[in-house]
Length: 158
Image 1 (cartoon, rainbow, N blue to C red):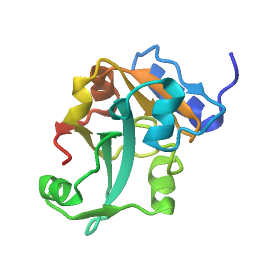
Image 2 (image 1 turned 90 degrees about the vertical axis):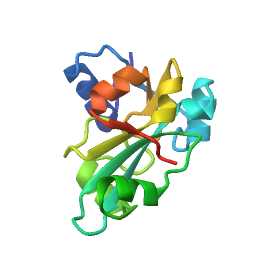
Image 3 (image 1 turned 60 degrees about the horizontal axis):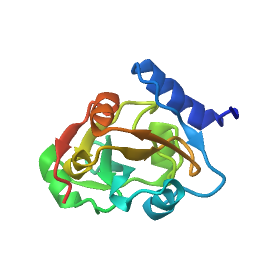
Image 4 (image 1 turned 45 degrees about the vertical axis):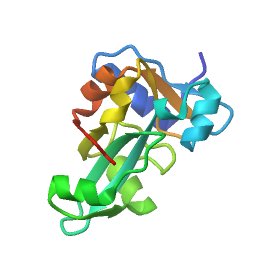
């Protein structure tokens, strides 16, 4: 088995810490977008877990929205849920808060634990695929395992 990059290994270690035997795999092609990731593993775009980092506008807290690759997050809805408006986080904020670059943000293994929400649409799939620290790394898991590794609250993101 090939040695994983540092960021992908951090995700692999986080999965192990959660007691899961899931395997991170690094691919030669890009998995940066949901479409690229779905094509790389042969699944529906909806089965791709997008881990999006937002920033609260007043308190500057990181918010992780783990959503289906088929959905666009409604920032107004999320802001109402957390009772504070949110904005897309800058690349530097994402790197500082998670340790990952945009395009490779995983749902676990963050430097600091963000406030986390899971898109309810992911629960309709038997298996889903999430980024694993780089724009070339993924791992397969179930929605139940996603809930376990993120400790996120399931909501509608639309």
